[in-house]
Amino acid sequence: MVSAVALLPPEVANQIAAGEVVERPASVMKELVENALDAGATTITVSIDGGGLARIAVTDDGLGMGVDDLALALLRHATSKIRSAEDLVGVGTYGFRGEALPSIASVSRTRVTSRARGTAEGNEAVVEGGATAVLRPAGCAEGTTVSVEDLFFNTPARRKFMRTPQTEGAACVEGLVRLAVAKPEVRFVVRRDGKVVREFLRHADVAARVRELLPDEPLAELRGSRGKVRVVALLGPPERARSGASHLMLYVNGRHVKDRLLLRAVAQAYGSTLESGRYPAGAVLVEVPPEDVDVNVHPQKTEVRFASQGAVFEAVMSVLRDAAATAPWAHAATRPRDFWTEHLSPGPAAPTHHLPDLVSHPASPRLEESPRLPTEQHVLAAFLGAAPDATDPWARLAAAPSPPAGYAESTRPSVPQMLAEPRHFDAGSARSELHGSTFGALRYVGQLRRMFLVCEGESGVVILDQHAAAERVTFERLRRSYLARSVPMQPLLVPERVELAADEVALVEERTEELLSVGLDLAPLGPTTVAVRAVPAMLLRADPRRLARDLIAELARQGNDFSKAVDLVLATMACHGSVRGGDEMAPEEVRALLLALDTVDFAGHCPHGRPVVFTLRWGELERKVGR
Image 1: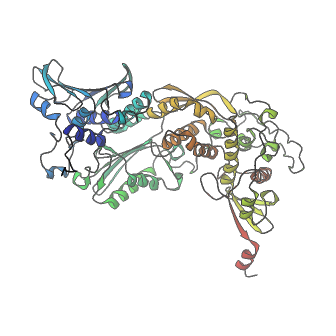
Image 2 (image 1 turned 60 degrees about the vertical axis):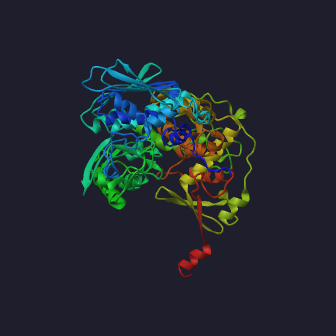
Image 3 (image 1 turned 90 degrees about the vertical axis):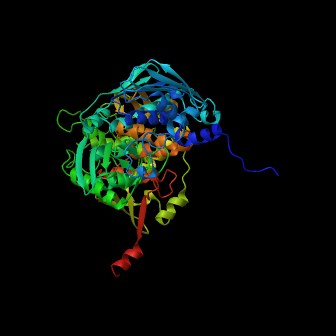
């Protein structure tokens, strides 16, 4: 009987094992640079060709290797970092498994050239697809150069899942940025296709390195310790927080990690000043005794386990909370500043913006031209700047509002060209929330805490979340325009420069057409900079920089299928361009919002799932007061 179980050939086993370590070119770069750091390098040069799929080369001036060490380094589970299982407790090097170099060599054509310090001659080892290494003498400087060519040439199933060379190359650069933070004393040089694209000079401390990497962020330096836990953080103000945690770098004992515990600690340290789902840009470096953290959790070593998670969480949270009290932005307003507050002065020198007369309509009272601040007017203009619809109360409020300062004259088509098919209104869904009534039938009573709109209806008191309601209206208009492939765009007079991660800039280049389809015109200016040239006309109150950052973050989270991500993208845009909690609304604006809710597909929730309306029935209210 033939056995059903068989040993895999060594080369197949190595290729399978390589999948745990080598996911993409950025994984190769990370492992090679970490080896260079473990070797004591003070200068590391990374060369990336063809996105890293054609070639990745890492050159360092570290200790180097002799011929015997070079031969062993290419064998699986050969390492200079540990000697016994006891050494895994408190391991202080980046690498220790002895898997990275042989795994890389098994799926590429690898050449390692090295010369140990104090020796006269170097040596070279050449490996193709995991075969036996060929060793020979070679002339080279002290240190080591590892050249990896034709990555995944012998595993086409893996190679076909790689993204464009631009994206893969950007991921390599971004990975090196994260490695560079914890090693400010090391100089890093990055070349892409023969050109130097980034260079990180040596610095005396980590604060200078983080500020070099994030030059546009007003970072506050926060330091402290609790028990055995030391924390050094460079963090931005809450009003500049970004969607997701891609711009918040976390480190444990100098190792870049992904850890939800530390993310929660940062969020709680900021408290209510940080919106849910947003995190500040910057870096948090945590030091704990090596024996209190396990780094041997995953082959890529990006996950760690703490011996006492509660103590680490409490230490990080309390240090950041206490230190943040003295940060430059600690006494700023707790809610994000409006873009127009930053760019339009309410003083005499500021341009005066008047709302135009209302279109005559029996259901819409005439607005008085009061001396309202430009920021207040643009809250209304954000809705009015969209393509008017004959049934849209927001459009009926004004004929053609002027764009705010900083925007060029609109190139939108005429009103007749922008009229779309009448929208289907799901009256049953809305009436179920209002117990048979509609929004337009409500009588507006007043605004609570500049956040809730109190109305009176036939069946009781109706309370609306003004941001959720406005977001729903904006989302429906954006979605309608997107489906009609006619999202009106408003050019900026002076494009806004936005600093992004290298992989996010690559994503902009990949998704240019898709971004244009939702009304956002972005143009890459460099490896980590893009220009915002135009925004959707109905989102004039949104900060173009914040809108661009959050939109790119949402695209990165959703993956390659834009059709599945478009509703989340539009929801993100609607959130930015809508009336927010804290904005004062005039009765005419509230009336227009109520009428607008009767013209959209309404399901009782904003696009992000929060409820829009709450009803307190008259009978329930009477019972509460004992009538």
